[in-house]
Length: 166
Image 1: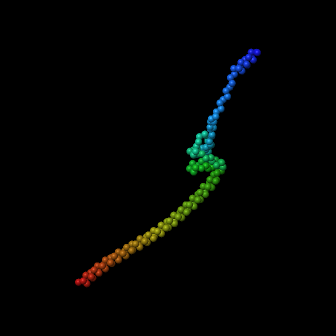
Image 2: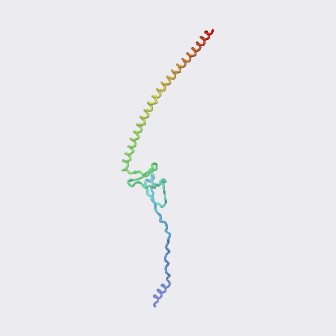
Image 3: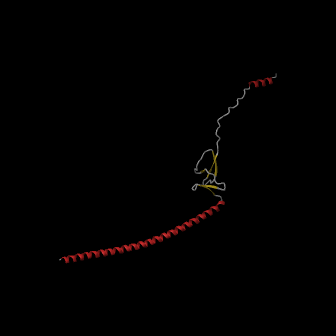
């Protein structure tokens, strides 16, 4: 045997078998990334991915995704809904605002007419109350006159009875 062959033989004899790694029967939970949305005046729309669990809106983080049809979404924190801030949507929003103004103008007109009717009813009631007060005063004067007449008649009748008794 040559020296190289004996070295190889010694090396192969001294090699320890490699232990196979133990299989891990416990599976570690994989981190599931969740998607949320950021919306402020400065940053109207940004997607956030995190493994944190958020169950409700917490300013400036929104849980619900915006409608995919919105070109430039922004969250309205007062109404609790997404809306479109793209230039294309301005016309639609302007139309909606114009329709709202027409509805409000109609409501104002109705309220003004109702107020006018109420004022007319109040004026009519005031006239009736004035007439009723005048009637009550006249009735009081008549009752006072009748009362005075009754007292006078009562005195006359009593004095006539006294004269007859004499």
